Amino acid sequence: MAKRIQTIDLDCYYGDFKAVSDINIEIEPRSVTAFIGPSGCGKTTFLRTLNRMHEVTPGASARGKILLDDEDINAPGVDPVRVRSTVGMVFQRPNPFPTMSIRENVLAGYQLNGIRLSKSESENVLERSLTGANLWGEVKDRLDRPGGGLSGGQQQRLCIARTIAIEPDVILMDEPASALDPISTLAIEDLINELKEQYTVVIVTHNMQQAARVADRTAFFNLQAIGEPGKLIEYDDTTTIFNNPANQQTEDYISGRFG
Ligand SMILES: Nc1ncnc2c1ncn2[C@@H]1O[C@H](COP(=O)(O)OP(=O)(O)OP(=O)(O)O)[C@@H](O)[C@H]1O
Ligand SMILES: [Mg+2]
Image (cartoon, rainbow, N blue to C red):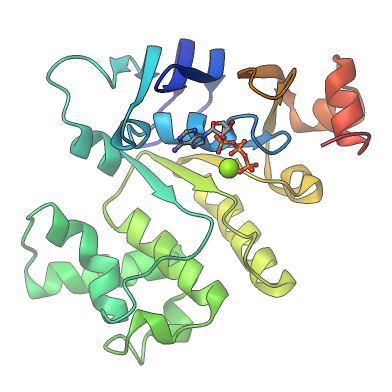
């Protein structure tokens, strides 16, 4: 549960294009870390590299090391499918399987991994995951209805339930609330705050107030010019990043002078 992430000299490429350069970062377990920075600076690319989703894009590759506690997730013989169940991901747009029931959505990870659960095990996973995602009360009487019939905010919490169902160590979220209304956004933020008790949580957000509300640590990424790779400019406690950043680029970004 809740592993430390460390990257060493990490570069991410699309073909010959270096999108992200030289990232050295340590992300603590049982904490929330926010990635912020202007569009195109490589936040999504870097995030997807952390669970080996980046390599799924044709032509994409990465160099450098990613350690989960002390395990190199790209070492020969490491199964990327196992990495992705250890490091779960929640996307920007809620993406439940729309025709599958709420129950089937939550249990989908087991089915995809070919794991058969007994009836009582499934019921336990279902209740634990939906409770963990703060959705149980709203759906417990309609578990066999389609996931696509929920509101946007409920669908995003269903996707979080699906992610935590398989008991990952790390949860990556790429702008998980950007498609949601303010009430659902606050529900997701409350949930993130609870998730950090058990998991390592990393969230990409364009919303500075959101980063300030939910993150213990914040990493600011930037790119010097179009076509240049994105870099990690500053990484510190969230309060320091927002109140007393060390770097002028961070200061300019958080005060809205660019980006
Ligand atoms: N599939 C792809 N093929 C080629 N280049 C890509 C691909 N995906 C992203 N890029 C490029 O990599 C760079 C980083 O993109 P990325 O999506 O990681 O940025 P981002 O910081 O997440 O931006 P945003 O805030 O807009 O989501 C950009 O120059 C982008 O055009
Ligand atoms: Mg992105």
